[in-house]
Length: 182
Image 1 (cartoon, rainbow, N blue to C red):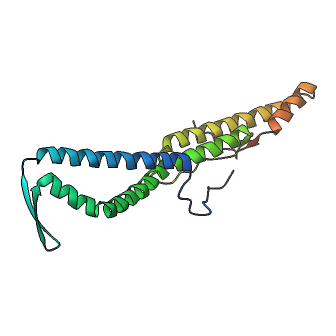
Image 2 (cartoon, one colour; image 1 turned 90 degrees about the horizontal axis):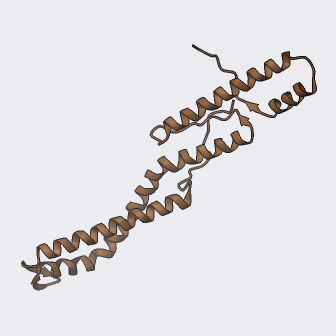
Protein backbone atom coordinates (compact mmCIF):
# COMPACT_ATOMS: atom_id res chain seq x y z
CA UNK A 1 0.00 0.00 0.00
CA UNK A 2 1.25 3.46 -0.74
CA UNK A 3 2.48 5.39 2.28
CA UNK A 4 0.81 8.50 3.59
CA UNK A 5 1.25 11.41 1.21
CA UNK A 6 4.04 13.73 2.37
CA UNK A 7 4.39 17.20 0.95
CA UNK A 8 7.96 17.94 -0.06
CA UNK A 9 7.81 21.74 -0.26
CA UNK A 10 5.38 24.50 0.55
CA UNK A 11 3.21 25.05 -2.49
CA UNK A 12 1.07 28.18 -2.22
CA UNK A 13 -0.70 27.77 -5.54
CA UNK A 14 -1.78 24.20 -6.18
CA UNK A 15 -4.10 24.97 -9.08
CA UNK A 16 -2.90 28.38 -10.30
CA UNK A 17 -5.74 28.91 -12.76
CA UNK A 18 -8.55 28.16 -10.30
CA UNK A 19 -6.97 29.94 -7.35
CA UNK A 20 -6.05 32.99 -9.47
CA UNK A 21 -9.55 33.20 -10.91
CA UNK A 22 -11.15 32.97 -7.47
CA UNK A 23 -8.72 35.51 -6.02
CA UNK A 24 -9.49 37.99 -8.78
CA UNK A 25 -13.24 37.47 -8.37
CA UNK A 26 -13.09 38.02 -4.59
CA UNK A 27 -11.00 41.15 -5.08
CA UNK A 28 -13.44 42.44 -7.69
CA UNK A 29 -16.44 41.69 -5.45
CA UNK A 30 -14.79 43.53 -2.56
CA UNK A 31 -13.96 46.56 -4.71
CA UNK A 32 -17.46 46.74 -6.20
CA UNK A 33 -18.97 46.37 -2.72
CA UNK A 34 -16.76 49.16 -1.37
CA UNK A 35 -17.69 51.49 -4.23
CA UNK A 36 -21.39 50.74 -3.79
CA UNK A 37 -21.13 51.38 -0.06
CA UNK A 38 -19.40 54.72 -0.74
CA UNK A 39 -22.09 55.72 -3.26
CA UNK A 40 -24.89 54.83 -0.82
CA UNK A 41 -23.14 56.79 1.93
CA UNK A 42 -22.68 59.77 -0.42
CA UNK A 43 -26.37 59.86 -1.35
CA UNK A 44 -27.48 59.47 2.25
CA UNK A 45 -25.20 62.26 3.52
CA UNK A 46 -25.48 64.68 0.59
CA UNK A 47 -27.42 67.26 2.63
CA UNK A 48 -24.83 67.56 5.42
CA UNK A 49 -22.04 70.11 5.75
CA UNK A 50 -18.60 69.11 7.04
CA UNK A 51 -15.81 71.28 8.38
CA UNK A 52 -12.35 69.72 8.22
CA UNK A 53 -8.91 70.90 9.34
CA UNK A 54 -6.30 69.52 6.95
CA UNK A 55 -2.65 70.64 6.50
CA UNK A 56 -3.11 73.94 8.38
CA UNK A 57 -6.18 74.77 6.30
CA UNK A 58 -9.86 74.65 7.11
CA UNK A 59 -12.02 72.96 4.51
CA UNK A 60 -15.76 73.48 4.36
CA UNK A 61 -17.90 71.44 2.03
CA UNK A 62 -20.52 68.80 1.67
CA UNK A 63 -19.79 65.61 3.58
CA UNK A 64 -19.43 63.36 0.49
CA UNK A 65 -16.94 65.69 -1.22
CA UNK A 66 -14.80 66.04 1.92
CA UNK A 67 -14.81 62.28 2.56
CA UNK A 68 -14.12 61.35 -1.05
CA UNK A 69 -11.22 63.85 -1.09
CA UNK A 70 -9.74 62.23 2.03
CA UNK A 71 -10.37 58.79 0.57
CA UNK A 72 -8.64 59.76 -2.70
CA UNK A 73 -5.58 61.01 -0.79
CA UNK A 74 -5.17 57.86 1.29
CA UNK A 75 -7.05 55.32 -0.85
CA UNK A 76 -4.06 53.95 -2.74
CA UNK A 77 -2.38 52.79 0.44
CA UNK A 78 -5.53 51.15 1.79
CA UNK A 79 -6.33 49.65 -1.61
CA UNK A 80 -2.87 48.08 -1.75
CA UNK A 81 -3.09 46.71 1.81
CA UNK A 82 -6.71 45.54 1.40
CA UNK A 83 -6.06 43.94 -1.99
CA UNK A 84 -3.02 42.11 -0.65
CA UNK A 85 -4.99 40.81 2.34
CA UNK A 86 -7.83 39.64 0.10
CA UNK A 87 -5.40 37.77 -2.18
CA UNK A 88 -3.67 36.10 0.81
CA UNK A 89 -6.99 35.12 2.40
CA UNK A 90 -8.23 33.77 -0.94
CA UNK A 91 -5.11 31.62 -1.40
CA UNK A 92 -5.48 30.20 2.12
CA UNK A 93 -9.20 29.49 1.69
CA UNK A 94 -8.88 27.97 -1.78
CA UNK A 95 -6.09 25.68 -0.54
CA UNK A 96 -8.77 23.74 1.34
CA UNK A 97 -10.44 23.04 -2.03
CA UNK A 98 -7.58 22.95 -4.55
CA UNK A 99 -5.45 20.53 -2.49
CA UNK A 100 -8.11 17.82 -2.23
CA UNK A 101 -9.04 18.22 -5.91
CA UNK A 102 -5.38 17.73 -6.81
CA UNK A 103 -5.16 14.58 -4.65
CA UNK A 104 -8.40 13.20 -6.17
CA UNK A 105 -7.05 13.81 -9.66
CA UNK A 106 -3.69 12.15 -8.94
CA UNK A 107 -5.28 9.12 -7.27
CA UNK A 108 -7.86 8.63 -10.03
CA UNK A 109 -5.12 8.88 -12.68
CA UNK A 110 -3.21 6.15 -10.83
CA UNK A 111 -6.37 4.02 -10.62
CA UNK A 112 -6.89 4.43 -14.39
CA UNK A 113 -3.32 3.19 -14.80
CA UNK A 114 -4.37 0.05 -12.87
CA UNK A 115 -2.57 1.02 -9.67
CA UNK A 116 -5.19 0.22 -7.08
CA UNK A 117 -2.81 0.60 -4.14
CA UNK A 118 -3.29 4.38 -3.98
CA UNK A 119 -5.08 6.03 -1.05
CA UNK A 120 -6.28 9.60 -0.65
CA UNK A 121 -4.94 11.36 2.43
CA UNK A 122 -6.37 14.80 3.18
CA UNK A 123 -5.34 17.34 5.79
CA UNK A 124 -7.57 18.16 8.72
CA UNK A 125 -10.04 20.85 7.65
CA UNK A 126 -9.80 20.11 3.91
CA UNK A 127 -13.00 19.96 1.92
CA UNK A 128 -14.02 16.65 0.35
CA UNK A 129 -13.26 14.34 3.28
CA UNK A 130 -16.37 12.26 2.60
CA UNK A 131 -15.60 11.95 -1.12
CA UNK A 132 -12.02 10.93 -0.35
CA UNK A 133 -13.23 8.29 2.11
CA UNK A 134 -15.72 6.99 -0.47
CA UNK A 135 -13.04 6.74 -3.19
CA UNK A 136 -10.72 4.95 -0.74
CA UNK A 137 -13.50 2.52 0.18
CA UNK A 138 -14.26 1.83 -3.49
CA UNK A 139 -10.58 1.29 -4.21
CA UNK A 140 -10.19 -1.12 -1.28
CA UNK A 141 -13.29 -3.12 -2.19
CA UNK A 142 -12.25 -3.29 -5.84
CA UNK A 143 -8.79 -4.53 -4.79
CA UNK A 144 -10.37 -7.19 -2.58
CA UNK A 145 -12.68 -8.32 -5.40
CA UNK A 146 -9.79 -8.46 -7.86
CA UNK A 147 -7.75 -10.49 -5.37
CA UNK A 148 -10.65 -12.96 -4.94
CA UNK A 149 -11.01 -13.31 -8.71
CA UNK A 150 -7.30 -13.99 -8.98
CA UNK A 151 -7.49 -16.70 -6.29
CA UNK A 152 -10.51 -18.33 -7.96
CA UNK A 153 -8.77 -18.20 -11.32
CA UNK A 154 -5.71 -19.97 -9.89
CA UNK A 155 -7.96 -22.82 -8.77
CA UNK A 156 -9.31 -23.42 -12.28
CA UNK A 157 -7.70 -25.96 -14.54
CA UNK A 158 -5.16 -24.75 -17.09
CA UNK A 159 -6.66 -23.25 -20.20
CA UNK A 160 -6.04 -20.35 -22.55
CA UNK A 161 -8.99 -18.43 -21.08
CA UNK A 162 -7.65 -18.84 -17.57
CA UNK A 163 -4.22 -17.59 -18.65
CA UNK A 164 -5.75 -14.57 -20.42
CA UNK A 165 -7.79 -13.72 -17.30
CA UNK A 166 -4.73 -14.12 -15.08
CA UNK A 167 -2.72 -11.80 -17.35
CA UNK A 168 -5.41 -9.12 -17.02
CA UNK A 169 -5.63 -9.56 -13.26
CA UNK A 170 -1.83 -9.50 -12.90
CA UNK A 171 -1.69 -6.13 -14.66
CA UNK A 172 -3.40 -4.50 -11.64
CA UNK A 173 -1.30 -3.24 -8.77
CA UNK A 174 -3.58 -4.07 -5.84
CA UNK A 175 -3.75 -2.53 -2.39
CA UNK A 176 -2.85 -4.66 0.61
CA UNK A 177 -5.39 -7.23 1.64
CA UNK A 178 -7.96 -5.99 4.15
CA UNK A 179 -9.80 -8.02 6.72
CA UNK A 180 -13.51 -8.28 5.97
CA UNK A 181 -15.78 -7.60 8.96
CA UNK A 182 -19.48 -8.34 8.77
